[in-house]
Length: 483
Image (tube, rainbow, N blue to C red):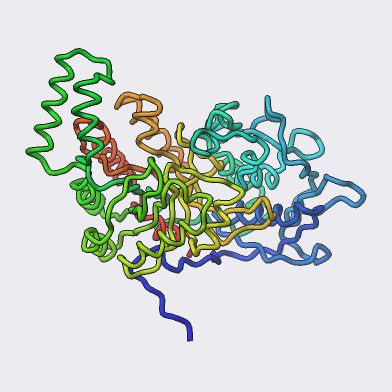
């Protein structure tokens, strides 16, 4: 007898087998790319409500085939039912670094053609989609930043200024026309009856502002040593303001834990909180989980999701992840299957495989730390792909498209410029009927250091609510989209 599912945490036991109208499909692609081709086709079809039934390439009455050309090493044909045959390229998977082969456009969004058919112009949607979804560029561009992350500045999106264009969703939208013309039963997936969604997610890096390090910073580094290089009057005014806040107001980080939930519930939604369970590095701030037990269980009772935000060194250490997962599960008394890495640290050769091995089924790490946009070219959920073994993993990625610190700190945008960037992203996601996974920390409403963050969060919630988005935690959105 199987163990009963724990339904208190929406992350527990998400189905990995999406439902959809079945298509009779086949591939015959040179190794090692057959698994890649099938993966890309599945991910392209999934948001259209279609699911491939894989048959032998010799089968008759196929709906869709991606077939190797006899005697050719890298050319294949794509055959859509009732349409002429076209020829496609699926080769080295390394596009020219300076410029794409060409561009395709949908409603003003220009997406690069990375791989084309034999005529050199017609896109190979399968190869193009695989390149972005698999994170292939992070394997062919061997550049990492100081936090062991693939940096935006090294990406093809930065070179071609396409970070905010979900290229895979553009490809899919254009391919959809051909599928519909062939009489295939396309039906765009929804988010629990809504056309698009906002995932309100929150990394809880610490639970108190007024920690010893912050007191030292304000009194010694800022007031006495003038690390900010400002006038004496400004130093004194800041210190007085900090002292007054600490003495007379609730700790803003602690208060934000509750206010975030209330703001989301007020708009009929739920959110995902990612909690830390260990501090192993200077970039970690430790806090105790047991005092949060009552608050976290209230979150679960209200339909919110709690996931793991593991420590700084954990992205390449399965032992750390497993230990921290167990600690948080002990407090919650419910299984954890949702994760986001601290500092968005991620090694594509190790981290996704580690997540799968330690029991996680939903990740939301893959966004750029220093720029908003679509790191894997999509605003739709997709399965992660292990490029080292050329096989898909049983982990779903809900791709992060924006972090408030990126806008206000790393890019230094004003409040209005930050909102303009956010609104453009939201409109893009709405246009492609996807999910906007956005990250706010519990520094919201800290008027001393982050005066614009809280209003930005509330404005985003109001916009999504007014535009009829479903506002839910990550795993609830994934489950509503897949069924």
